[in-house]
Amino acid sequence: MTDNNGINSGAQTGAGSTARPGDPCIMVIFGASGDLTKRKLIPALYNLAQDHLLNENFAILGVARNDFSADQFRDTLSQEIPKFLTTKVDPALWKWFTDRLYYLSGDFADPGLFQRIKQNLTEIDQKHGGKGNYFYYMATAPEFFAPVIQQLGAAGLTDEDQGGWKRVIIEKPFGRDYDSAKDLNKKVREVLSERQIYRIDHYLGKETVQNILVFRFANGIFEPIWNRRYIDHVQITVSETVGVEKRGGYYDHAGTLRDMVPNHIFQLISLTAMEPPISFDADVVRDEQAKILKAIQPMTPEDVLSRTVRGQYGDGVLDGEKLAAYRAEPNVAPNSRTETYVAMKLYIDNWRWADVPFYVRTGKRMPRRVTEIAIQFKRAPFVLFRKTSVEALHPNRLVLHLQPDEGISLSFGAKIPGTIVRMGDVDMTFRYDDYFGATPSTGYERLMYDCMLGDATLFQRSDMVESAWSVVAPIQDVWDALPPRSFPNYAAGSWGPRDADDLIERDHRYWSACSHPVQKT
Ligand code: BG6
Image 1 (cartoon, rainbow, N blue to C red):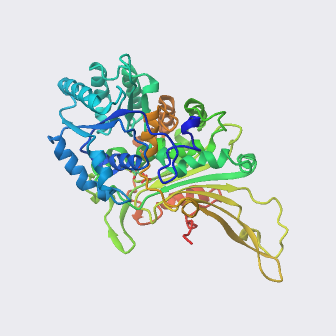
Image 2 (tube, rainbow, N blue to C red):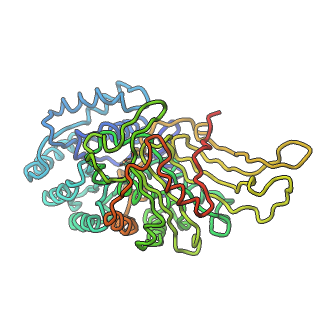
Image 3 (cartoon, protein in one colour):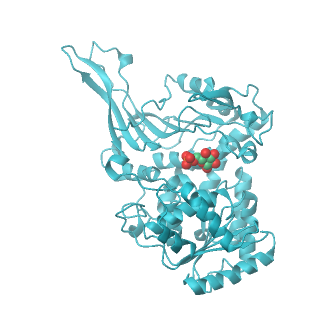
């Protein structure tokens, strides 16, 4: 996040963007016939093109096993793109875009494919002027990440000696536990240097997630109270209404802990809890984030039993629609023990956060889609208002609403009009839409743009990934050793298992219930 493409002037999609276009380059997408490409990557690149943030000298080479021709690839994307864009397709722009689309089919295990990629890249580069700058996007199944990168290395396609930069974006999941993440890091580092590696977490592409840093560090009034003296606890909720959709095969082996916690949730924790960086240089910001991940208190097996909760949804109803149990989803084992819900209480062992609990919960098939961070402040030390019972005085709560109703709200007590002094809770609310309008974004725009400029601030470094997995390792171990006995333990369309309420209520605290969304006015 350097000055010329940092938070203030970065790749905001939407009118008024003043950022310069990305470098001339060619993007190679491995797994180009898959869902991610059509749903996110191509729409994001189109949005960048619309905002003049793609270089005139840009092209895409899609690579996948499907035996398409380049024309078929372009036709398929032309049919799909309207479904995944939030704006209408501009035919002239789409033509500009498809003139830069190429495709190669082949088997990722075949070294011959990588020779053909090399040949194709040379031709595309001559035509489009990519200046030898290539970035490879791993949108494949995770088992191909290391082999494809090794083949790229063997074919000399990651070599920067001949001029031009070479970068690799690696999708999540980065490993499935600490050992596999370490092993993947090792294999990737045998071919690439750390500065060529961009481990993506799409949460960091969300405007509202980036805004956590701006909110905390561009305003003077919050930082002085952002610590254990004033904050009682922090709650992070990532609830989804969707089930596992068509991803049962992947999900049943992953589960919510792996799918959400060491990546998305830990990004939110590190941005909320980190110390102010001394600059927005990639490594300076990531050093501060990494310190938080390293400071998350490791759990003993006893802690795992008392401070974590797992759940799996059974049948239920959401908005009047009957929903099937997780075990009845396609490609899920009928006796599956995989969790679809996780709640836990974490501590960060440093001076700022000692003894401040971070309650985290995330799950599928919840009643509402909500991602929010609620900062609950301590109560006023002394209650002056005799007519208002102490229980009725709620502590101040600052909520960062990350999605879908993006905004920030602060609740505080106010006098209810009348001759006697009584107090009630009121909200002060900011909505993104009111100030900035809605901007078409998939969340991937910023990340791909940053990669084209060589800015890795919003990508995960190897030490961050490994620290995150080491925090969840004891939980994985205890959960594997003690299979759940009561699954399914929450109804689809409910807020999760009763145990998750107990987890926080034992501490005389309550889930913020996401009952205070930022309402549209
Ligand atoms: C993905 C997970 O990384 O993030 C999914 O694999 C999850 O299971 C998704 O649904 C949530 O992302 P978002 O942007 O919809 O909050």
